[in-house]
Amino acid sequence: MSDNSIPVTVLSGILGAGKTTVLNHVLHESDDRDLAVLVNDMGEVNVDADLVAESSDIADEDEELVELSNGCICCELRGDLLDAIGELTQRRAFDGIIVESTGVAEPLPVAQTLTLGFDQSDLDPTEFYEETGIEPLEGCHLDTTVTVVDAHQFHTAMESDEILDDDGTKKHLGDLLVEQVEFCDVLLLNKCDLVDEETLEKVESTLEVLQPRAEIVRTEHGRIDPDDILETDRFDFEDASQSAGWIKELQEPHESAEDEHGVTSFVFEARRPFHPERFADLLDAFPDAVVRAKGHFWLATREDEALTFNVAGQSVRVGPGGQWIDTLPAEERREQLEANPQLEELWHDRWGDRNVRLVVIGTEMDHESLRDDLADCLLTDDELEADWSAFEDRFPTFEPPEPAAEDAADEPDADDQQEQTEELGIAD
Image (tube, rainbow, N blue to C red):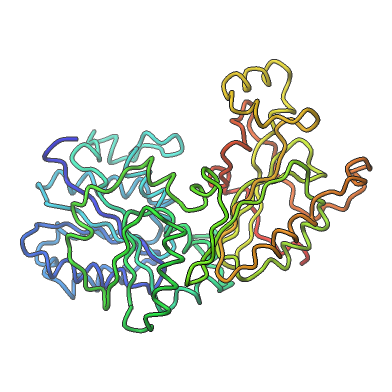
């Protein structure tokens, strides 16, 4: 990275969290920095950009403020984002660039775009890029990812069943909030003046479990020290991608003891499949105390494919996780086992690599009761010897995975195949 590389900060957060308020405060308190701002808005009229222009001196020079409207920079406007970044870095040597995402944006694909540029396989070069040859990331680097969380509305958002529309893509509010929390370097806990200390500590405890790596900064009315989010040098894509609490739990499973705020976790593992009817019934009535759950599972009626499991607040999603290695042709199976020697320790004489592995995080959660409920969903000894095809299967079906897939069960992650995941109630 060049010493002259411009640091970029990305602000994320659901609608109403206070991103624009934070941005305006940072601009007001950064007289010693020459900052450029890029504001994304889903609508044709960029309301947030207007608010920034009205509330700061940045409108004095139009080249300092860039608007990206009528779309989201985590999906259809990724190329526009790179073009805008490239133009800004060509104009002059700003001390920093702040990108305010729209309220429905997921920070991971934004960070990926600002790390890989047009090297992403699913992103075609833009007309501007092809005509100018400007490498958009040549003069800058992603420095800090920030998520703004509304302390007053946090639990309400997590418990909400509201569905947001991101240009035709449906996103569950609680699921989006969790994704924003799980991928960031700094968590700004805003509107702390609207809740009491006990509530603040409960929210902080939940955030710490969901994202143990991030620095949590309390704030009121978006007032922060600009140094908390500018030029921190905190961002590392690999660290950020692997820092979510559920990943840590799967890597180092343990059953956390009750703390004073009741935020705890456990990992459920099994070497026999779930009964599709009983597991569907459990998911239809999954405990509200669970704020996050993720992993992979084996369903008796889907002997060849692993399925992924993703709970965030009131959102419960199931998706494809690829083939079990045991189902591959003998030569491919041998190659996979040689490439992943740790699988030999997990290999079952009868079931191969098929298994269930789920991490569950919740508040005031009854571990024993939920463990028992999950265990009751597993096939009994008699059912193991029965005809599994006779079981009713209400789970959605998915397109076959690409051939030569990585081991789906070794490091489960629904994000890579998110387009195929489906929201449940299964009973509806």
